[in-house]
Image (cartoon, rainbow, N blue to C red; front, top):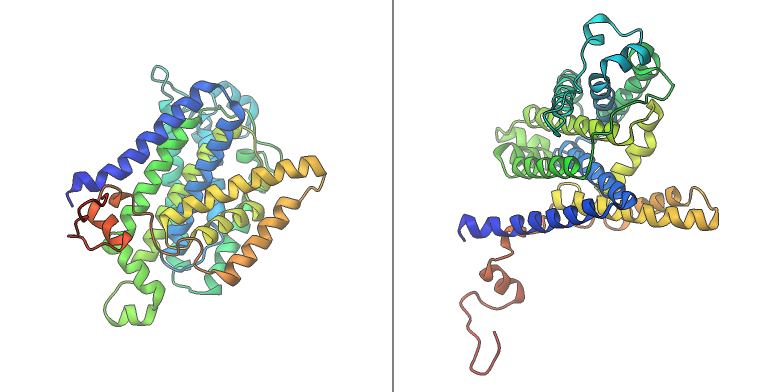
Length: 359
C-alpha cells in the first residue's frame, strides 16, 4: 500500500475533527467548548503517562508534578509586567522583569514561547530526576515518583514569592482555546505514536516484557526509559501551561492524588501501551465523569463519581488487565486498504465476487 493511501485515514480523521471544532467554536457553546478543552488536556496527560509507564513498564505516579511545574512557570512568565509587580511583589529581579504577554496581531506568541520555556525547564528537571529514578523498577520506582510529586507539592506551598503558597494563583491570561488544545493534542499523539514505532520504542517494549532478556541480547534499558520520562514530562508541562491559561486560577491542591488517580484510570482502561487506547480511555472517563456529575447534582449524592471510577478501575485491573486495546492501535492507516478489509472479513485477498453476488 502506498504512503498516500496509508496517510489518507489519519488525514480524514483530522479533517473531520477540524470541521467539528470549527462548528463548535462558532456555536458559542461555552460549556461544550470547555468540556472539549478538558478532554484534550486529559488526552495529552494520558498519552504522556502512557509513554512513561505503558511503553517502558516503569510505573510513574509523579507525572502530575511536571504538570504543576509547567502551569506555574508559564503563568509567571505570561503575567503582564504591571500585574506581576503588584501580584507577586517579592519575585527576584531576574524574573520580575520578564513578561511574555506579547501578541503578533491576534496570535499570542508570548504564550507559545512561555509554554515551550516551561516545558524545556521541566524536561531538565525530569532529566535530573530520571537519571536516578529510571534505574529502579517495580514498586520501588512507583514509590520514588510519588515522593517526587510530594516534593513538588511542598515546594509549591512554600515558594510563596513565586507561587503565592497555598493562596490561589489567579490573574492568568486566558490564552487557551479549542485550537491551542487541539493542535497540541495532535502533536503529542503523533510524536508518541512515532516513538512507539521507532527503534527506541521497540527497545522500550522489549525491556518492559523482560528486562534481563533484553539486556542479554544487547538492548538498552536506561536510555529508552530516560527518553520516555523526559518526553512525557515535556508534554505534561505543556498540558499544565494549557490548563493554567484556561482555568486562569488554581492552587497547589489541584495537582495531587485526585488528578493523578483520574489520569491513571484513563490509562488503565484504554490500555497501557496503546496510543489509541489512551484517547479512548480519556473520552470514556471524561464522558462518564460529566454524566455522573449531573447525577450528583440531581440526587445530591456528592462523591458518587469518584466511587464509580474507583469501582471501574478495580474491575478493569481484575477482569481485563490489558484494558480496551492492550498494546493494539486503531488501524487508521488501513482505512482505505481493501486487501486488509478483505482479510478482516475472512475473504482471501485475491477473491472475486461470484456472478450475481454483490461485492
